[in-house]
Length: 115
Length: 110
Image (cartoon, rainbow over all chains, first blue to last red; front, side, top):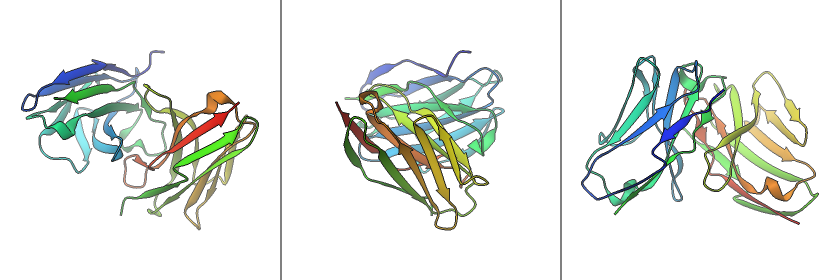
């Protein structure tokens, strides 16, 4: 059974640009959550999608957005990139919405560097 | 508010020793507590979890205990090995999302 796949693994972007990251969850999983990991802030929740609907959202500015497709694959987009957006972006998949009592499995992450 | 406190931030042990990492959560509605291990350059890997109707769970050298009254849960690793060296995160799901602790860097010296 394939795990969570995130693409690309590494990205370098310039301030002001926008970027799109992709996540393919484990087959059969319908919930996809996104997290930002930085040395200073740790693992911070961005948002969660279930059945193509955003069910929960963290405290990030509107420049961070996402969507989920009918096959459960998800993308997140960051517009007008800032230096502080440099981070490891992680995607987690689980069977149901809200990670309530069900295991969440993470991908390898996308390392975004903004210069 | 949403908060999971995790201690210690770093832990150095000799191979064969035991290691204990402790977390405290805030939402009394939390009912699921996973632990993740993150190695350099990789995403977090689920290593063990516990639900609120259980006080302890063990899987080989790893165990987790939960004290719902005190809102504490702990990870215990026995007979540590160098390959246990990594960053460990606790989490809870009290706010319908994974809220992570700040992480513990475990170093196991041969």
